[in-house]
Image (cartoon, rainbow, N blue to C red; front, side):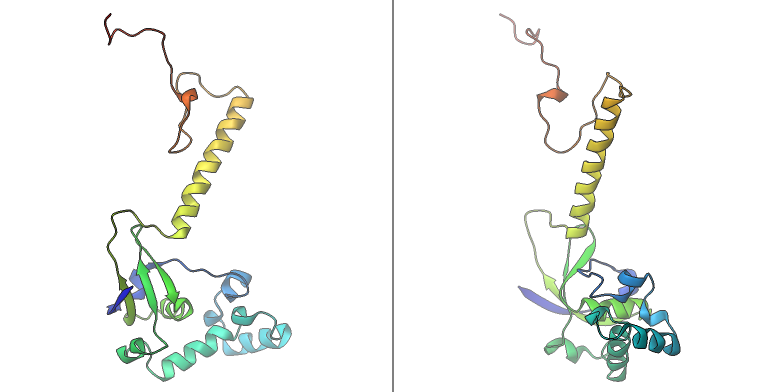
Length: 185
């Protein structure tokens, strides 16, 4: 993979994060720890202990302070080191990460308007979407199938046209006739 150091505005980008409740305080509690006062965060830290790893209330707060102390977001030289943010643009408009999702999320929460990243340069002959968009599309299809099953069971579905439930269809969606005027014998 080839990367290029680029300056981006994280507040204008949409990112796809691979995070869970043990990686992100906000996913666990509904509010980013960066929005808490120091007193609130300290009280929560004392109550919870160290059981949540990167999802601990102080994790992103400490990381944010250390990044701001060394001007991480303003100094492009960090992107030439092991502390680089490596991201990949996707055709859906999102960016995914090899490294640096917490640092980027912090920048966005702190409303930092400019930062340097290592952006993958890629060209493909096919569409490359992020996993979040793929999952949303699959969920849409599944929900449509469930809705159609319920309507069918309740006989509420109109018989004139079947809603196509995905990219692949079977012959149930078509009406075949024994003869056709297209081909003359």
